[in-house]
Amino acid sequence: EAQVTQNPRYLITVTGKKLTVTCSQNMNHEYMSWYRQDPGLGLRQIYYSMNVEVTDKGDVPEGYKVSRKEKRNFPLILESPSPNQTSLYFCASSFGPTSEQFFGPGTRLTVL
Amino acid sequence: DAKTTQPPSMDCAEGRAANLPCNHSTISGNEYVYWYRQIHSQGPQYIIHGLKNNETNEMASLIITEDRKSSTLILPHATLRDTAVYYCIVRVVLPSLTFGQGTILTVHP
Image (cartoon, rainbow over the protein chains, first blue to last red):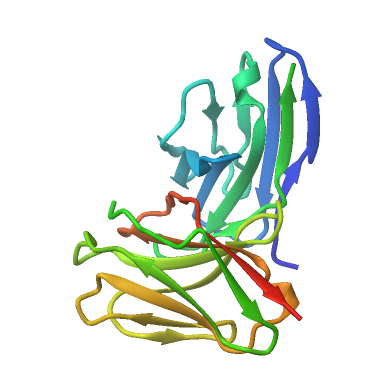
């Protein structure tokens, strides 16, 4: 089944403790993105990648890192999480720049 | 990116067509119109997109006005499972999307 998977689905952590949210797609898509969703602010893009080793900032990249060492994986790294990064995070992938984006199920992160 | 304006909420009776409007008066010639929806807190789901011509797929139809300043998403026979937040997004050819507040569509029996 074609899908985007994210892990973990739920995470509660404390300020400053490094964490990684994994994202994997099995559709051989070139493009992958990370979004965060906050009440009243909609979904905002954090980072995106157009291919292996090619990444770029989205609208709200501060406090996040990404890497694209393999085509299928696009992990989101929070080196020193802070409470303002408490949010619902979505990973997405697409075949091309105008293709539909497939979204993962989401990761609900709480930073205390 | 062109800004979009959508009504905050709409209601529709089950089995009837749901027509969701979107204004994008500042759209430029190379910007596409995309529609996604999000059911509760699930990942957004792609519905349809278009540039100039009207488009139809198994889920919906997209009607874009001739001047491209507005569009309408049509769900021909709405069901209770179509209750969701619907997002109209205007974007150039890039894999990044900025979602606004969208329209909360409630389909009632």
